[in-house]
Amino acid sequence: MPSDGLSRCRRIDWDARLRTVASLVTPDTLLRWHRQLVARKWTYPRRSSGRARVLREIQALVARMATENPTWGYTRIQGALAHVGHRVGRTTISRILKAHRQPLVPERPTSWQTFLRAHWGAIAGADFFTTDVWTLRGLVTYYTLFVIDLASRRVQILGSTCHPDALFMQQTARTMVSADDGALATHRVLICDRDAKWTRAVRDQPAASGVRVVQTPYRAPNANAHAERFVRSTKEECLNRLIPLGDRHFRRAVVAFVSHYHHERPHQGCGNAILAPNLTDRTEGRIRRYRRLGGLLNYYARAA
Image 1 (tube, rainbow, N blue to C red):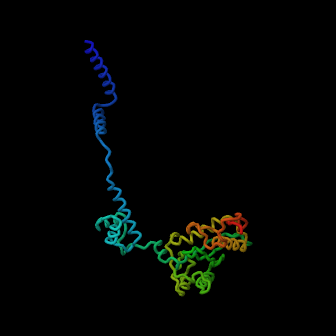
Image 2: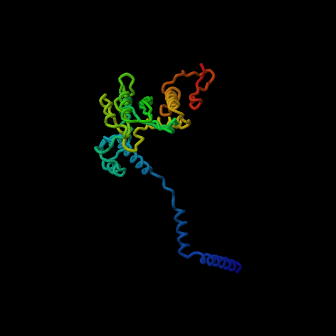
Image 3: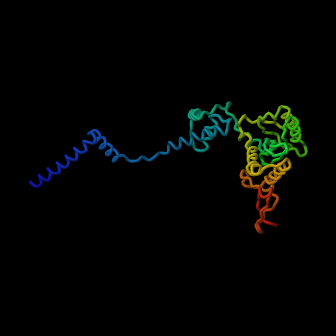
């Protein structure tokens, strides 16, 4: 009897709980929760076979090979993949290239980076940078033309003027191709933008000396990135940090920066090396601070 009473009490208590839950959820919801708990109990994590990762690697590799080698077709890419341990069919390579919107071999363009590296050592870049100078006539904009050797990063200033007319451009063009100390004496390719100052007559003078003039696309500063980087360095490190007071002050600042750029400034693109160091590397002695433009440009070396 006590046992039956205990069972009844338990049954009544359980029924009361069910009625409480029934007021909150439906029987279908309870059954769904039950099925989910059972499924979770018997579900074991699967180990990844690595197939998806390999497929992603192959796709990225095919797209990379096609981009870096514009003349490679499906069979050539297939052979290159086989050398690195991937056996891929030509149809699969074609499908991957179409998914990455890579054109066929005759239509695949050569990148500017590949073009520059193929001509490294015989190619130079030319560009202008502007500076607002205070003069007796007020604020005047000066245009400075320079040429940079892409292999060594060395720069030659060709001239600064507030009137970059046809006469100035023709004179600087003749200076560039001078046989003795011209900026293009050892170069065969000159990169410039499509500024109106680079007229046909100006471009014909280097071409007559065997220098091919290549004009960059419109709004593509990266096509002449080394020249653009020199302009940025000149502005950020020197010209934007002073107020040019007259023609002499401006020209003296440009000369000082170019000398600092060549002989004292480490270049990150060249492994933090100095292009043409004046001082020998010493490991002993007091470290001195050398200044240009009153300390606007500094470099440090051990005293002799």
